[in-house]
Length: 382
Length: 144
Image 1 (cartoon, rainbow over the protein chains, first blue to last red):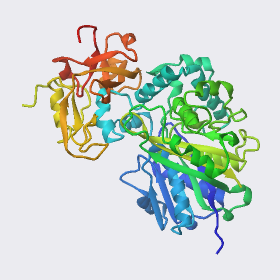
Image 2 (cartoon, each protein chain N blue to C red; image 1 turned 30 degrees about the horizontal axis):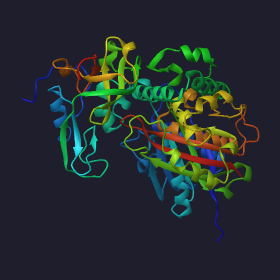
Image 3 (cartoon, chains in turn red, brown; image 1 turned 180 degrees about the vertical axis):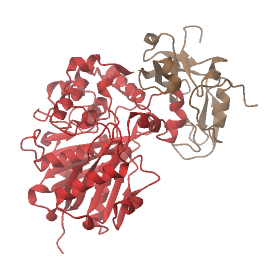
């Protein structure tokens, strides 16, 4: 039997809302419906389900199957926060290759608002709940303030440079009807925005919101050639570096060479980057760790580039979480969904001209000081 | 009785058999760290086994309570209710004399005085009792 190549054959986004008007399953189902439609598949074709959500408990992928009326031969719940959704796609592709399923729906999302988020993040992990929340860390902002200050003091990284990530992503969001924050901001507005967790200010921080994202993993021959997206390489890594509380690097640095080797292309071949943007400093660290510039050199690198959809380094071309809002675990999939949209040349109004390949990276599971998990995919147009 | 305790306005850690020695020591104003008997690793927060070598033969050591700020953030917005009147809350990554690093709050009347590299020491009794976990102040220069 000829081997069928497995890839991304559908994608979809739900509506996004600042407050939850619906339960989490509704947002997940909204994104799932759009993904099925984009693949030309029916519900009955789905026999695998992966869910990346930090708020689904006590429900899980199997009870989701009951809710959504699916019969499954493969079910997966990710454990890696904002790195979880990309890991789920990798695992889904391997499960299909091994014969456990044919078409896997990968969902990620959340029903929440800012007040709910504040309660939830205080109890996010055991270590965070017991040893950080009693200090008044204010969710994760204080933790990433520590990381950004260290990067600024060690490498001379400037807010003027990091801020261009937020400013250019907002310009991208102005072309995305789903983004909750679409009003352009200037670098001057970024620099003097209200202090949140010094050195972090307002436009460094994501706004928790409700929404969901979905991709369908399956045989590429199921869809027309220009609608299937290939997975050229992918890795996940957890708890690296070990024991460092506020590291300026993550698991990406360990597999970067293997990732680009497997794909047979380098950072310079990427038509865009969709990096996990809970904070601009973490986008900057992902650019360094993936080899776009040397460690500590990201300030000068950002100063040389424009990160808009039509710039020299298109970055988070739909506006990213910084402009769309962070729909919990959905933040880990929003970048891949935008990548598929771009590679199918369906990103109307913000289409990167001639996009052939892109890097998508994930980050998450904040515990005692930083996110423990990293993940990356290199995807390509067929 | 397990040390005196002022009513704390702050969220409290869950007290367990694993972290009880640390929490009890702190109620005496002492920072207690764990040390692995097998590989000598010194670490914080309390765990049931050494994260380096998995030995469960751990002992508690008394830190001299002094350290140095590696990096910090001052949280102005989004603070939980109990902390809202105390903004900004200074949260710091601190390396203590014994070599362990931890995250802790630094109490300071003048937030501008906090710098990376600043020397810190644990809050003295009885003020220490106000805080649920080992908490620091800037150390004034003086004899070591």
